[in-house]
Length: 323
Image (spheres, rainbow, N blue to C red):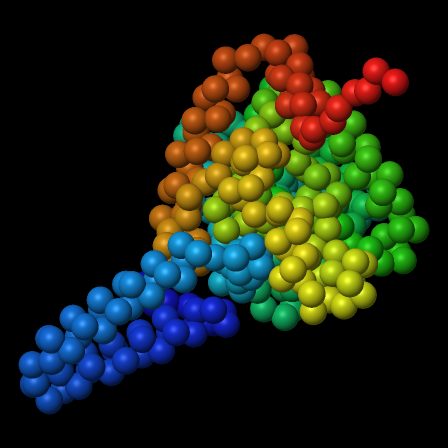
């Protein structure tokens, strides 16, 4: 497949080398000139530069990859990994939030319930999806589907990809905080297996609202944080331009989150990010989901609830004083 035209700042040396390589190959083909030595030299330099760039990514650079406009979104993974997805609409109270989708599907022949945050690609779709920021009715729709999954004994797979819940006045008027809090409580007590995957951005309570699950997975170049780097920078340094420094301080990247046991597994991505080979990224995720769902299928309802409680209860570090 063609490589994405969009280039991140730190990828510019790679793009320039790629252009040089393409120009040499075209010149060799059009003029019937043997440029194999020159082509080999550029290919070697390109490979070395790729290793240097992608094996030493900073936290902020990984945030940029997580936001890449060509990165696969929830519906892309759903189309690849699941069969017969049937989207279910509405929260039965106010409206249908298109930033948060859900419905039934089959994964490896097993019926599951999917809940996902969905961004848009083109301008109209971005607006329709509210840039992936759910409103209260989105979380209430998710809760309705969670209860349905519990009723019929369906495992739940949730895809997290949001900068955060929508913070607008109308969202506050319809009690977005209460809607998220209700989901946290109900997901903690849900009597069915649950797995969540951070596939891009995992921002604040907006992400956690569908993320209180038995297993939490994260793609290699995704992030999961209590606040966006820009938001943190605006609070601490009064300047959103300090986002790179904030990204390092927040410890929001996949590897660090696994070390801290915030996530259970880091799912590898194709070299340079999932946008470089969405099909391969999907297959890597398929293997991980299959393994975790198989493990959870061996637990009883009570064991699932207890294991989920223990997972979140053990997060963090604290000390007790005798004084």
